[in-house]
Length: 249
Image 1 (cartoon, rainbow, N blue to C red):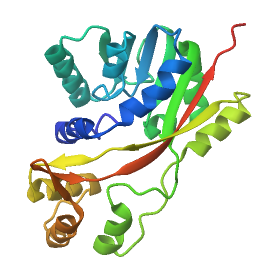
Image 2 (image 1 turned 120 degrees about the horizontal axis):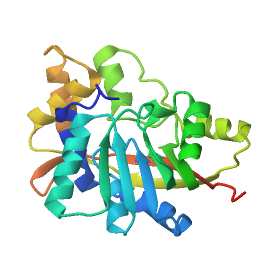
Image 3 (image 1 turned 90 degrees about the vertical axis):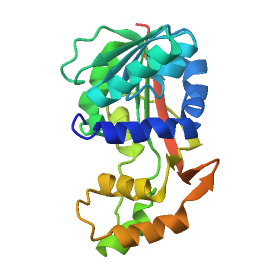
Image 4 (image 1 turned 60 degrees about the vertical axis):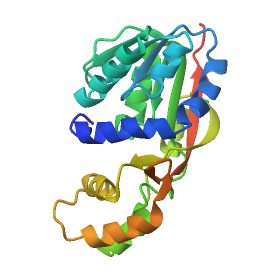
């Protein structure tokens, strides 16, 4: 994921955090279940989506991410807030020299779960007490209106997305019978104007020419909602929180 999160995309993601209740919904599951955990390792922490609210709740968090752009934004937000308790760590998950923490979190980072047994084993080895994995809960779920845009722009369907069930099946095969709690949340994306919105979709879809600009602009002008001086792309998401407590033996 190091190459995916350039500063442009990272800035957009950070702006979206001001229009989401994902941290609140996720921590409503995590904090009560891991009340006795003092230290957290957030794998693929991004710009602090969960690390910052965990620190506000009095936890000590190692925020690991391989994207320099994401870690830079996290450090900027920590400095602005004067927040204690978050230790940003720029490193690849496979190469980071990490010590065990009371709890390990991996939230919405499908790239790290391509080989789920390997990733689960590493997370479990670094967790003294708890592991929390959060993933998309619907393989047919939309992403950035792609289910409408792919037929419109490319004359083909978007296809299915990765889903938590592959990870859950791996857990089961490893003898880990994890709890599963489903959370629903909004994660809206703000834009200053329609031109920025077009740039956003071109960047994410990977369009480099102006060939689709008119269709994109017409589509987004009908789709986006103006609210409090910004244009909002409204997204509602469903994720599964898979968690377990390690044996005390």
